[in-house]
Amino acid sequence: MKEKCIFGPVQSRRLGMSLGINLTPYKTCSLDCAYCECGKTTDLTIIRKDYIPIEQVQKTLKRYSKSSLFRSKPPSCVTFAGFGEPTLHSGFGSIAQFVKKTFPDQHLVLITNGTLFPTHPELFQEVQPIDIILPSLDAGSEEIFKKIDRPHPSITLASLVDGLIQLRENYHGQIWLEVFIVEGINDSESELYLIRDAISRISPDRVQLNSLDRNPAEDWVNSTSPQRLIAIAEFLGAELLSKNSINIQVDALV
Image: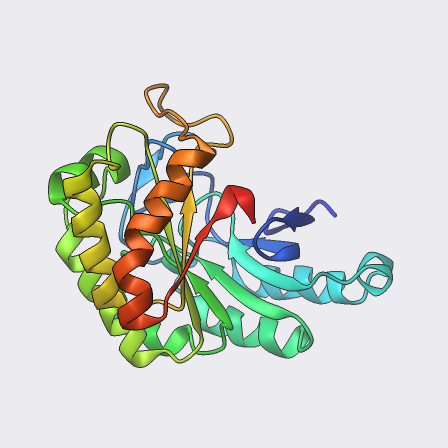
């Protein structure tokens, strides 16, 4: 079904059959991640706006919910994702509530880089209708964070981690933390120690290790072998599992 603000449903390894909701113009984001499959960020911002009118999003979703496609093959979840950072939409909270009412039998999922929580505390309330939040953490040091995620100048790794800790304290749904491994960049023992410490402080329900699967924004981003990802999962999980009962998963293999 081709609409500006929805896409799919598509089959997701992590989520099953998922209807995607896109709330921003192409590559409007607070990060410019080197591994992004959508390409380089063209509007690097932390300003929340009504990028796509709320009424347009609601009409599109309502039309889909009454379509033969939905009736014949309903998705297992509805996912905020798309071409940029979903929480940059100033009407995110209202849209999330509308989606929850319109699709009561589907899990509501948010894929986010998590960077806006520290500067926009209203988001802690806006995400309450969400069943599963998938934030990202790709570094344990500021240097590597800037190299891989290339944030808006106002964003630091410390602020990101603090925001995710606050999210854990204020949100009672599932948090599946995503860690994208870039071979030779964030997979050193020293960096992994720092990542492991941050994960322990955030205390997500699950950690998913990801590696390159599609064309990245930068050609220096290399994929990591399944064997190496398993070794990293074992390294991270050795302490985290004993202290926090966090489920460590290698996304490419599950």
